[in-house]
Image 1 (cartoon, chains in turn green, yellow):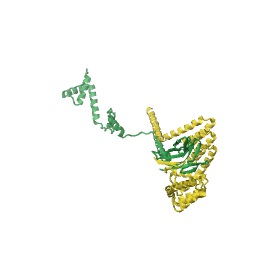
Image 2 (cartoon, chains in turn blue, purple):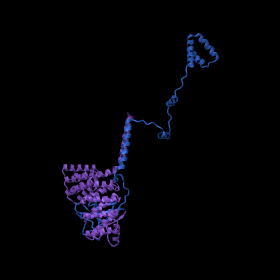
Image 3 (cartoon, chains in turn purple, blue):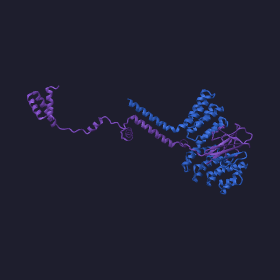
Image 4 (cartoon, chains in turn green, red):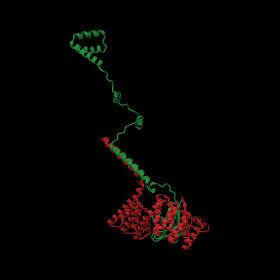
Length: 219
Length: 303
């Protein structure tokens, strides 16, 4: 239940807003004239209104709209939109020293790797893919032998790596795939006697007083 | 705080990834190397050597590998040496010679091959040491000779060709072929605008001749004449085969030399001579000849 003062205040606002009927305006004027307190309040409001009307209007700052929009609750984007934004939306990267050092370290590693690969010897840099080989057959006539193998530069002189097979005519034979190059070799008979191939292409001193057989493999 | 920690984790992950990517191509080689080294370590640990001797060999092995000697070769020398009953100091000595050769940036393959070969054939360790030490010195002497011709106009055939030539010159010096004879061969190749490959082949042929009983003078004169006449690497190889084949027929070396000289004077190329001999019933060995002699022989085919 509003009292008289509150009713009068409502009527004042109504008059100032231009919403009051003519009889309400006359009634209010009479009451204002009769009540000093009401008149003082009425004058204050009228003064404030005039002050607002006569004061300079400040333009809104440029960022006002953007700031308002920013403060609005965000609209939930679709997954597709978010992926698109992630991939193509421009963004500013923020750097710090740790990230910069890490990036420099990675670039230095990659650079070092490239330089090392370029300067590496062929045997390290090139991975042979199905390098051509020539199958070389070696034979030794040794009907009395029980075991014959061949050792040479192609197997680091391992006496048990390449064992020959005996044929009925007493000839021991083996076929070895070799890459192009020159190889020295000897037969090892019964695990102890080192025999030079009597029918080798050519021979080379082994440095210890014997002769190695030499085979030159070419494509 | 949490964000900073996450950044550190991401940076570490990036670094680890980059390191893994750069190391990947070498992973398989390293794996093979460590396998051989492990074999050598096991052999050393299982041997009856003293603790100090074991440590000494393993230290030499580490140094050899650090110098760039393949782990497989280090492993072969150690395992073969110890299984032959060679004293640890000799095994260390053999590794030391190879390591020093490699550290001088010389081709070490010949030294390793000679060491492994000597051990396989049961040659006494001190003899292997002497031979490989001299070989290493010859390699050091051979390097400037090859460098001189490579920088002086003899066409290079790459790092491999250069290393092959250094090894060949070292083997020539080992056979007591005078340095002057080698230098003269290089000059002839240079005048012909030949490659280091031709120089390599010429010196190798000269060494083969000497190794098969020709005098140094005869061998040098014949090879120089051949190079001056424009013989190719193929011709020089054919000369070697011709000489070996004639010797197999028990012809005296002087007769072989005079026969080759007279053919060269007639301007015949050696591979032509070889063809004539073959069609005339002569037999030649060789990987592609498919021949097989009475006692043994070689045949071959491409794959």
